[in-house]
Length: 623
Image: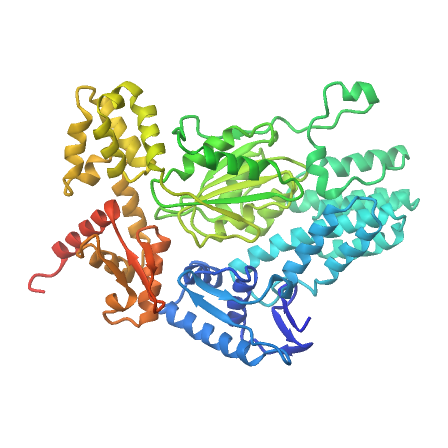
């Protein structure tokens, strides 16, 4: 392989085995942010979040363009002998590194791990495949990068490495090579003293090699470090090995590590009596902390099926699914409704954390982990940093099957600390930001309801008889609400509160553009307020451009060249793409010259016009 990118160690590039100088740490951070998703576009906002973690410098976009230009020059000049240069491409969705995943060590590592997990546990080739995966590590992942995003990702990747090492140890023990396992695990535990799974495999290897006294000493070391660092007791696996060591019994051959989440499920009724087995030790029934009063999801059967399948079928690795869509599209209701029906698949608990990503004060990763730990019955105490809390969280999840719903996420920083490598666990995320793409996530865009589904939701909310009495008005209401569940529910609540009103009265009010946003809102179901929360998170330039679009006819499309006004074409396109990411603007198409055209319509155009009027009224007199 002539091209080799490395992130499982210092961020490096080797061309024909020659190391290429990638520049300073910040520049390598940009490359790392692209390498974890090769061939996938990464928006400029996501790059800024990953490199500066919410604290960008003034003029950050100019800084981004400078680093990108430098990386392009380095990559263009570092082509393999007889090959093509590595391209860093730009399109309407963001920047994309044009290399195959096979050129990146992280993705080769994941590929080896997937191959090993697909093999029979007793297949002797598993040792070689897992060893090949572990040999790709050249030290601490993302070594030399000290920003918050790199730190969180490094911790997550280390957990994955620990799992791979435990699975390698399992394969070696199956092959009868306990001495090799003992030396490797002792070295690994010097760096990762809180990795319970590695302690388990080391104790198991010591017992299989006849070193019972040393196995008991190793358990005591593990117990002491877990108590000192985390203030908790060892997990069930370690305690069971300790019991066997005290009894002088040899532990059974190790079960497949990556299948443990399946093993913690309760055995079939009567299985303990039939086989004389000791019932597994279970934790107290897991908490199910989901809202009790949540909107129905009529018309979302397709999404329900996709989410349910994603969260229940794949058991060799944890599920990570992100639902992305604009304000009022019903992401949260969809996630909660589906999660409430998956208790049998996640018997140890289903938790929801509102990350408040669309508000003025999003939850920090530290606060989010603390809330989950307390919901799980842990009391971490004061003064613990994020790394300590994440370690405690991972220990609490070991061997469990839990589903975590992370609602309204703003960025990777809120999500990464709560991801688990436990195969039996799942994380379901909702977000307005299409740039939110954690490594290994499946992203599912959630759009408005179809016309027929919107009409069915109206029937479910208002009653079949009331809709059937005014079919034309019902159709107009669905069209005016643009298939968005939130305004459909709002207008239905207004009509239910006024049973003497006809649907036609509401339609006539909504046809008035000055009153439409207010007519299609009711109580807390305020679509205009949701759009305002999105608007407040825009950059000043994006806010100004949105207001400018509100002064144009709704049928007009616009390109970057048409809104430049002191911006370069590239800067203007970035502003328009920010509005697309915020679901305030649509891509209308690309013309024969490759120019991207954008359009704003309907409720969002009315909102933009309202913002334009507000800016006009706030402008200094005589402007």
